[in-house]
Length: 563
Image (cartoon, rainbow, N blue to C red; front, side, top):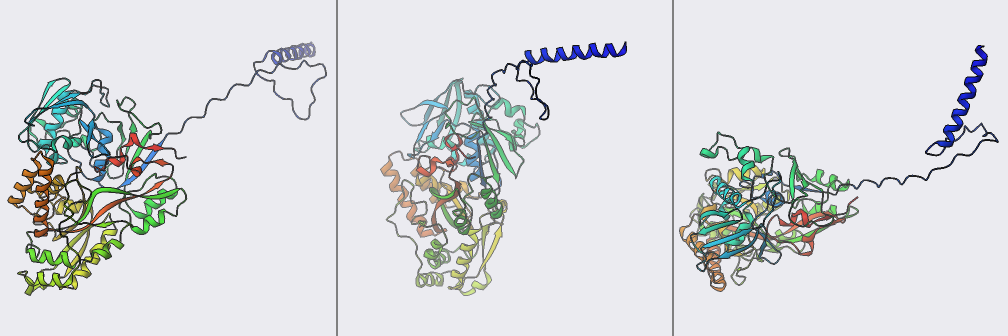
């Protein structure tokens, strides 16, 4: 009985298997290799093969190295890495173009009163902050007031001479200035508009700004409150900032614009080269040595680009500290420096500065005499210095930035040149943060700080204000501590002159005065160099980008096709 049941059960299983084979939605499983199919078996019907799903599109990633530190608070950052990051996180009323002017941005249009004292901006509607709320005129007012109160970052550029900012309605904002200025409008490329509600929600009650507490400064160290094309995804301080594309940005992206961008905070040569060789970096920082750039060119798929800039390399001479408080000592240094040899330490094509500001700035007077190496003149000037008989008591400290290794070469060249006329020079390597701190106070400011400075706008007058006006004393942009009331007055007057020909004539007179005061050794106008992968479309390399500092790295314009 038991065996009959087994036979019946086996028969039922065989029939079930046959039915399952004939009705299956896909091809029947192949028989074992050692087993031939039964002759009478009905072949299975083969279903059409399913179309495989498309391969996922890899993220387009753009990675670049920068010199530390990154201060991405729109009222705090103003160095190269901050100026490259902030335009990607925040929108501004106007945007700098490649022709040296400005284009409408958050402001679709504006009106200027006949006396040049009132600017009325009409804002674009529907602009979204990264949290989805709409940007309004009140956010512009808040951002200006915050920048002015904190007094850091680009406050020195944007806020002077502005009497008040008012939101006339949700989409109209009015600026009143105390004096007409041709440079007020372009200065607004540095007024980054932040989300007032979001910053207030993340403001600590206790802080140095009265009812505004800490004004959100701690939170904005690692977060953003912008409406720009990218938003912060990760930001471990002193390591990197990872930004991701903001899909609701109102502007246009290059079809190959990066989905993510990582700004890596390092200039360490071995690290940078390793990242580039391993295809983990699309573009290097501009602070590598000449030897490093030459090595980059040998990496397959990598080239070196040299871009014009508004930057120049200065030896900032402290005019309040012996022996460099004597103009004849300063002139002696300017004549003793070997400019021709210095240029051999730089990328081919680099030119000596022929004026106190970059030669590509509008309003530079290229006809004025400039310093060249002349040891006889150097010795004549030094003989008139009141410290000439006791120079051994006044060694001159030259501080160079540790993150920019090539600066040491110039410092050592300067040391050797000064020894030829009897001036002892001590060369000191300092981290960038220490340089910023040291130059902020007269008692810690060195005799000479070696620093690259870029003009905020492409006109000579503003660069002279950045570098030599008393308002920038105590910042890294002016170790000279010039504090000359007549110079301040002349710069202010020139910037308030609307007629360009008259304004440029005033610029020329200021430049001549600066050359006579010799508060700096003007070394060279910088070519900004980067090692870059050939799979990156970098508009700056074609001259299609504003030369205002940081805008070479405006991510929506950059294309990435790297694998």
